[in-house]
Amino acid sequence: MNTPKPPRDLAPKRHAEMLVFAMLAFGLSLWMGGWLYSGQFIQEEEGNALFQAGNFLDSTHSRDPGAFSSLVAYPSMTVLPFQDWKSRYFPGHPFWLVPGVWMGWPQVMTALAAALTCMTAYSIGWRLRIPRLLLPGLLLMSPFFLFLHGTLLPQTSGMLFSSLVLLGYISW
Image (tube, rainbow, N blue to C red; front, side):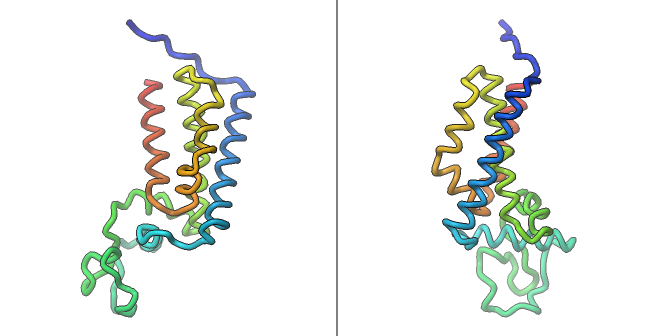
């Protein structure tokens, strides 16, 4: 038995609500990163992501260690410390951060991920016929969501892309 799909959402009220949730998520994410974390890293993964995003911005995947002091090298950042420096993590999140690194404000990309995740959650809830304010409201009330999107950790873009995959699956 096939479940009928809801029609395409063209109501301006829903779009306005979705935009309000997205702006709240964007603003709260930037506020958490600036106020709570003071723009500092909480894990080495954030430094790795920025390092690799800077490499991608310079159209390279590794750096020559000759220009850097050995005090800067740490095991989680470098794969081959005496040959070339590259991040040991998967490059998906650094690719996501490249526009923010280019602008000089990488935190804006995790804030954008928070905004888009809220919009996706709103769409998922609407497609599943869940009360429309429930999913984005729960995200914005979740300390985990806000603390996570105040950082540059790769889970921020991972949450966005997995919610997009879920939305695509539901829409299909």
